[in-house]
Amino acid sequence: MNVEEQIKDILARITRVDKNIITRESTFKEIKADSLDVVQALVAVEETFGIEIPDEDAQKFQNFGDFVSYVESRVPQKEKV
Amino acid sequence: MSLEGKLALVTGSGRGIGRAIALKLASQGADIVVDFFRHRESAEQTAKDVQALGVKAEVIRANVGDAAKIDELFDTIGNKFGHLDILINNAASGVGRPLADIDVKAWEWTMDINARALLLCAQRAAKLMEGRGGKIVSISSLGSRFALPNYTVVGVSKAALEALTRYLAIELAPQGICVNAVAASAVLTDALKFYFKEGLAKDSSYVTPAGRMVAPEDVANVVAFLCSEEAFMIRGQTVIVDGGTSVGLLALAGTQEKQT
Image (tube, each protein chain N blue to C red):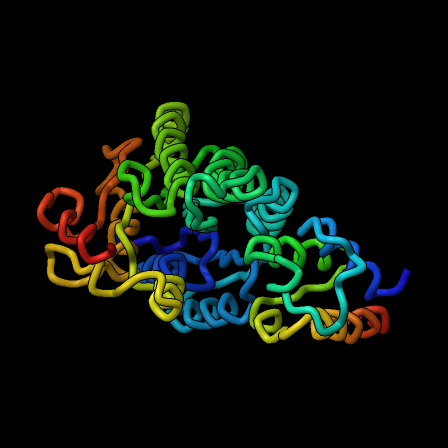
């Protein structure tokens, strides 16, 4: 499963929405993710991929696509190290 | 009051009250472990400011709502320093919702971070304080005893924290560990400024009988006193820092009026 699918699974599990409605353009509000859902999703993604996503970075995510791109950019970086 | 040579862990000390406490204890000579969960840049800034006061600072990331992360945090402190003198249980989180909208997830999240963390951190801290005594101070809020709008889960978690403070004070007294709490009314922090910005609260609602809002430094000053030897005989208490709000019925009534 690729990064996008894994994050989609995490978000769908936490917010209890159908993962098929989540697109790269979806905002957290559209996925019905409240602030607690977002924090829990960030933590779950951090643990899944072994990375850290500080709030300073997370606050810049406009939609699901931004979230995925950020994680994708960090995962290979970590693997190189 | 001097804390020279002491080591203090301040949970959630990247920002707000925790940061003010870290700086206050550092100004009295204590080395500081800066714990954070979500804001690394802020934590690193606190550490830099602590170091600028001439003491050591160590930044460790740990979500105190996660028991395994608390173990990791104390394992790191144990391995690096071998002891601890002061635990400030400050990290807090919460969900501001009406009672009807509080689900299990919101309850557990809030209780784990605000109340259970004190139990787990105190257990581990007591071991690192063995043979040397220590101080444990938690940060509570007026919501532990007054019903504030949309504050139920946090208020209940703070009530649990204050009760736990009393039990810990008795159980840890034979080890020379003083356990207390400080409860503040609304404190002017970035978190509260966010609520102002979002229109969820008005700053005028929080002016106290003392004539201004409570600042993080007001809380830090009392915490520092409770960490001093002068406070040795204060045990299991929750000291209120609210500029008189909770004892002034007229002031409280004014607060209610302004919020509606």
